[in-house]
Length: 411
Image (cartoon, rainbow, N blue to C red; front, top):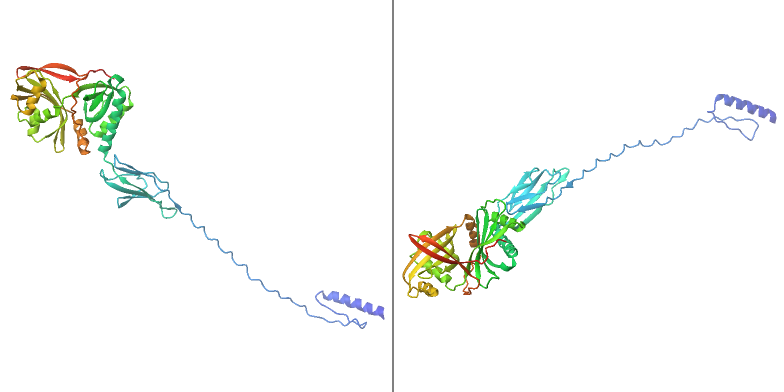
């Protein structure tokens, strides 16, 4: 029975095999008979996954905006020129001067401004960006007050000249500068007149130091004088010599000059200037002994001013007078001063006008209140040397005696 059943089972299996693997069957284990049961194929439904989403787009990177560098700003007080450094990638520059603003192109890096001497200023410059890749720079600002340039040059000239003269004059003719009276420029020589003391004596002396320049110069401003003085300071080959030294030795020098100016008997060009409204200011005056009989000389160095018109002149006047004790020099000079001299006449024997440079220098002197030196009352006549010369005037000859420096050598 068992064998038959097995054979039947095998036969059935063979049929099932022929039907295909898609049919499931079951075997009844209790009986030898097969109970074949067909089940339909089970379909497993799996969830359909969501479609893969499109990738999230990556935004373009935000462009980096670079701030421009701030320009370096400078102001040249002498030329009134505002300038600034060129900034890479700047599209232009915004300039503010004392509250006034204006934009300029990238090719502009300097600007002439209008700042008067003595005025305060606030000036700013900002580099401008393109609004996309570059932003505006920080604002660069400078403030200050424009100096008075003539005063600046004037003070520097005095400082340099003092150093030059006191340094270049040699030991036995050493000079100590007290003040500068005037500067003149003639035939490429710089002439510097100063009140000073020397080791030749205790008297104050008025000396002109002459600097013979190696290079040709044209002088129109006080700045030009400053350039020349700077050249003298740096060039050791420029020679210095002494000219026209006058000693402040008599206590009546100033009184004699004042009397001379007040006297209506003045003649010559000095009188013409005074009659035409020029006001005189004494730079120095020296009384000479004249012929020591009936006249004496007054050598005066004078600044003449009429408004803004300034001239510097050297005048020699001869004062002739009748006086009983005519050989007593002090006596007949004082007789003229106190008005007791008889038959006084005054004659201008020389008049020299300095070059325009003197006017430039004296204008600075006036503008900045430099105190005029005063004639001393020192009567010390030590180390004074006198020279004489004969001058013919209106058919008459005058012997003029005047003090000079002991040394005329060049340094």
